[in-house]
Length: 252
Image (cartoon, rainbow, N blue to C red; front, side):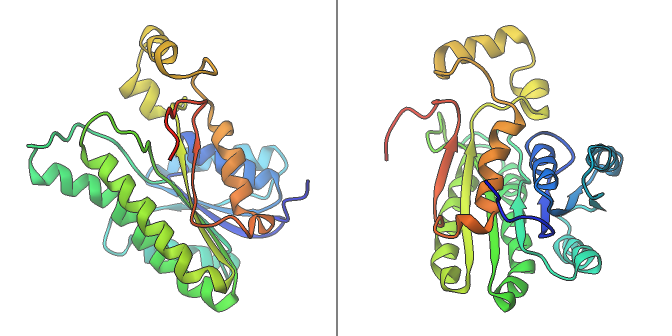
């Protein structure tokens, strides 16, 4: 199937590792012109080398802190300098950390800033261009809809999902879609180094929670995201899609 992404300018945030890296590689394999951004420039350059070595167009590398006051505008300008427009935005910035109900406001504010505010501000920066060209694809990476406890990252993810649905309603007639993808447990830096650092801990979680029997790879998520980025996904918007190996246990 031709996803009609050839030569379309795409931006992937949080692209240095994990899911963002996998999405950038798959978009490039589809012929898209990809801009990649994160804070660690050395990892972005390694990814650009890998994509170019595989025969794709070398991505535009944008080393920037999206959380800074001018971060989204810096990133947008770099994309426009390289490609003149932007058709696709994949919002993949986010993190999780301990944030109990009685935790300090600083932790809750930080997690909302990185998980929700960064996504909102980056989207707000590029939305006028999409509205002008009457085309755009916005895909937001969020998290589980079945949180085991009340914490800031889960609350921020819920905020993104509600905001994304509202945005879909607002801009659908302008040829712009807005969707959320909820990854399950993916073999990424956060999972392997922080959440489940040992093979034993991963296997215990798999046995209890994942029907397909393994943690996913970034490419397992990238397939869904790249489809949602494509022009042929024009009738899919306002959705929240789980890609989790069956981990979600309840219907809506």
